[in-house]
Amino acid sequence: MDKLVLTAAITGAMTLPTQTPHLPLTPQQLIDDAVACAEAGAASIHIHARDPQTARPSHDQEVFGAVLRGIRERCDAVVVPTTGGGVLMTPEQRLQVVSSWRPEMATCNMGSINFSIHRVARRYRSEDWIYDWEEDYVKGTEDHIFPNTFRGIKTFIETMNANDTRPEFELYDVGHIYNLEYFIRQGIVRTPIWLQFVMGVTGGIRATIYDLVHMLNTADRVIGRENYNWSVIGVGYPNEFELATTAMFLGGHVRVGLEDNLFVKRRQLATNVELVQRMRGIAEEFERELATPADVREFLGLKGLDAVGY
Image 1 (tube, rainbow, N blue to C red):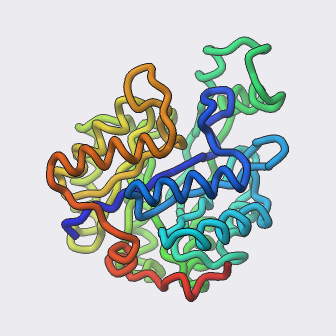
Image 2: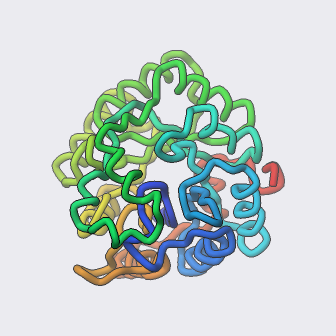
């Protein structure tokens, strides 16, 4: 599709309240940010849940349900909940959102990595943290493995298939492409295949143009260029905009948002809407029209809002 699919990832599980005052934390804040991003041009919204009292990443299905329903009541964006969850969540807890709410899409992580944000702790003193869980949470990721075993991935894919939820395959390194090929050969991956190259996580592939091209060349060779479409995440600034702009020229799609990057310009903290607006401006400058939610549903063969469980 020539139109650009622009996704906004609005909160995540590895961005901390202490890092930015603009991070949406409560269900109402998440809903408001999602709707504002959709109005600014994001056809797709990626969400995590947060405990409304503590702001800690959560797998509480009531929170997920409130956010999903609230977004649907106010806009028609394609909402993509996480199954990546957060630190210490079990695979079963991470997957609950699919069986509970039967979304149109959900993320599906294609391999285990040492997913860490421990270096963030160096920037703050103990008294700087807004919430008492943040410091231990951040430092603990130095010893954190984000687990996605073959058995677990199979369960995730089969659960999504059973609920007619399209997987967004999250690829954090080259080996994850081969993991996906394995499941394609097992016959459980449905087409069209939608890939998200996640680049710049400490523990995964770096966020460089060289590495993006390497990921694409590998996917072309292993999966076949005709068999998939793709988007890219560049973690951090200026990675987010450098890789997104490169992806546009290579025929790919893009994700921006506070889950991945805090800055709209160097040392200038952003809101989610400002990140979407900047990306929209780049797309318009190079005459890449933005896709609408209806375009995305047709492009990816999604079941539509009438078939979700919220």
